[in-house]
Length: 262
Ligand code: SAH
Image 1 (tube, helix red, strand yellow):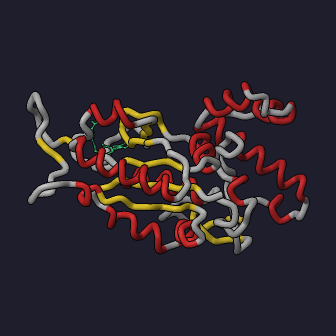
Image 2 (cartoon, rainbow, N blue to C red):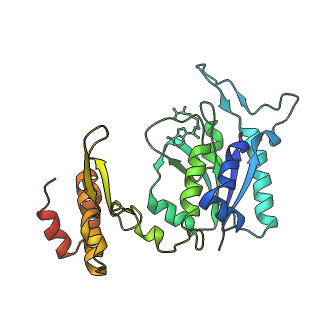
């Protein structure tokens, strides 16, 4: 079933590249991810088509006005109803939101979709948020100039989970976080490279880890699992704890982790 995203934005042109290249283009063309752009300016009124104004109480920057947002959301609700779609929840991108995780992406990918609200300027009049927003999502502890990149990020992550969008269906099951661990390293041809260990150094022979050439699937799977455990334990120990708490570490995994120097 397709996932539908109704995106409210002041800069719809930022979404064009997403629609024309790579995996996301395929998701778009096949409508596996059905993206509808709603330019907020279309719902502004008056000669100046205002969508923002100065903040009460003073201070720098501008605030997005409630009224154009309400009109835009009404148009979206009407369109969802006309298409027989569900009333999709409204997601606002904000540094004050809950950090986006693969778990949340997977849940959204399996859902009918959402209305994605991209903020600009200092943000949105709080009264709109209180009345209409169901969930706030953050990309991380830094400030962007708008919610468009977060919306693209979310839709990209959802798109690659749709059946038939990645060439190899198993591909995302191998990714970081899909089993709660970081991904293992990957190697391709040639088997041996003459390459300095660090840029600028003397060339040395760098072979691919031999187990990957062994053709022994069980050994390869075990090696990859251990690489995942090692990199996760070193870089994101809290993910190891979480996997342990979910009962996803085998005795073999625990033995390996005990022998690991961090
Ligand atoms: N004054 C706000 C920042 C506004 S930035 C504050 O200090 O929190 C303008 C818009 O960019 C926001 O409304 C939001 O939609 C988006 N944005 C900026 N940083 C973000 C982040 N880390 N995660 C998600 N959205 C973000």
